[in-house]
Length: 256
Image (cartoon, rainbow, N blue to C red; front, side, top):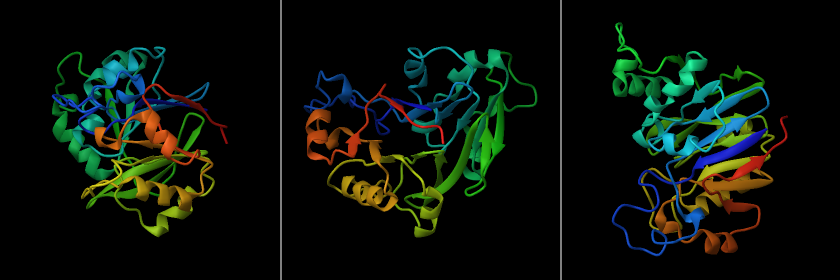
């Protein structure tokens, strides 16, 4: 199984428009972060988790092959704003999109023309499926367990897919969820920055503490803003088993 980080930045991306900080002015490509999304692939199956407004830019360098499913964490714009750009993949057939009831309703409101009775010719062909935390699903040869995390006061979904657990935009998680994460080898989790608490996102110390609870072999940090610092310097400060991810990074995992 291969994991590709399409985007690792927070809602504004990095560089932030108009910002002159050293991170936003950095020439290191690892400091250029589009909005969060990943591809999870086997030889038989290809999943996309979230489809943000940078999707077109992110997917162009990738091989053009069928997307078997799109897993939605929540319907904030930085996570679903690129849904219209899946249109080219509809030549393989309707694209199945999976979301919890809150995110499903958000997508119906955001993309009404995709679900109208008389659709405009050429709109994306989307099969929108309602899913719930703790109710497993299988797409191709991948078994998926949705889990619930709290994005401030908003319940959203994370996903455990075989040895991979993917969580973004988490502020807190109930202890009862941890049993669903057993067997996690690679953890992907958000950390906005090191200091200055946020009402709906955890900070780096929170992410490190969570990684220690999960006991993953390797943890990759995503959904970071420019305040986190320069990629190279931050990774030198972090433990070797907890590192910042970067756009276009590829990770190979065992399938089961």
